[in-house]
Image 1 (spheres, each protein chain N blue to C red):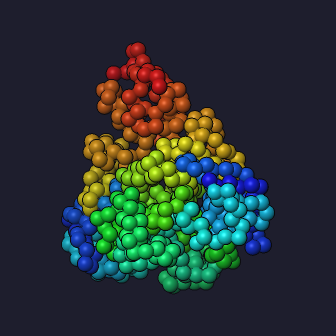
Image 2 (cartoon, rainbow over the protein chains, first blue to last red; image 1 turned 60 degrees about the vertical axis):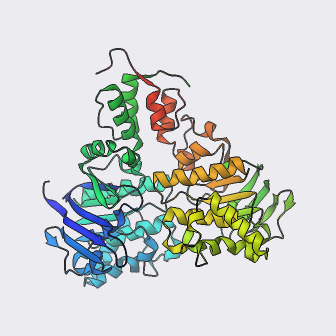
Image 3 (cartoon, rainbow over the protein chains, first blue to last red; image 1 turned 45 degrees about the horizontal axis):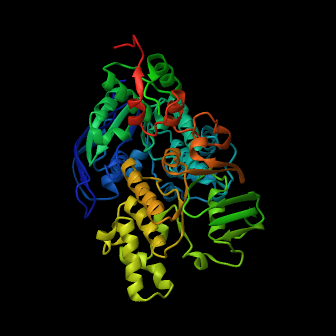
Length: 287
Length: 269
């Protein structure tokens, strides 16, 4: 598990006519990890995702220095389509990524562009629709699907090419908490089943606490913390202005550990936190 | 004051979206309108601003039935801020954008200037009056949307997912501005949101819709006491509410919660 899926080396980037957005990024996304990217607005999270998929600099141009490697291959000079077989990207502006009339066509679009045979396209379309919980919807018009269903369809179309790495930028922005939980549960199942590497940008990381293995925290265009989730969370907590980018359960954990000089277990679920809290604490100051 | 009496609604030939809803929102309230995707929150708020009209039942704004009115007739009473700020931006400067509504009402230039400046100030945008709206940050664009609605001096503001896509600091800023409007100017705030923490921290009253039915109307304290199972309505209890309820303490934030805990005798050190 020590192989690297995505590697940034001394990477700097600025869009055309903008200030430098990413400053000297050095980071590794472990192969097989479920990595979350967190951080305040404007920290460069989306730009980082675009650089991972090679859209930056290929599509956007701009100024850059340093290197990004995806699965051992530099993105420099690569077309987005060269990389798309190995790394799938789902943007937060999901409507802009949908191009077809029906769900089936939407999924077939990228497969046909990659030159797959018709039977293979049909088989994969059927399978991914099943995987994302939209079985048999091949002939549904896109406007018959809700926002949340469209986000799942987009996930299906990205998954259909069987990428080894999946990068998702705020994939549940149009969903209610129930829908968000369902999509992440599904994503985790697919991640496990296909041994993928998953990178997710998410503001509300409470949703991802049960699944995350690694974390990257961005702040003002720089990497503020990275590594295994537990370590990166402790690093982030040490920077007061970034604490609120941690799941609330971990803010509680790290706060209590610091306050009482104790160590608490690595909670991933509310029930685990409640159990240990009840074991060790009483609600002292009433009010 | 907005009042719905036995309101039913369906789009075109579709399924009913709002079923027999009766509720009353008084002046100066801060209400969270909650419910899962497709529960009817946005539709109910559209009924409140006369963008659509009930199939049966009546809506009253400040005591008047609005069945014959259009949104423009109501804009000085009910302001609406849409979910996607880019859809609401029409002009080339922040000032012109906020002035758009008052201009349509054909107010004098002096009155327009006064109202625009007051609205910009209320949302902390006074230094950006000459900026090009599309260059604003997402959080600033959302505040611009609120300022544009405010410039018509409405008594009620309806805000659709106003904190969506913003980080914690931007959310705090937005909510502090709204709280100030509510407290100091007694503007009624109706907040459509999925963010249970925001609803818990800022709204006094919660109205919950589930599949077009009104299933809860009461204080947010009662809704978020950590005891009620909100899952059947497609909602979740905020984590801090669950933890607070387990220790029978009131703690809206992580810091409050941790401060109120004591290590048990013999607790691990």
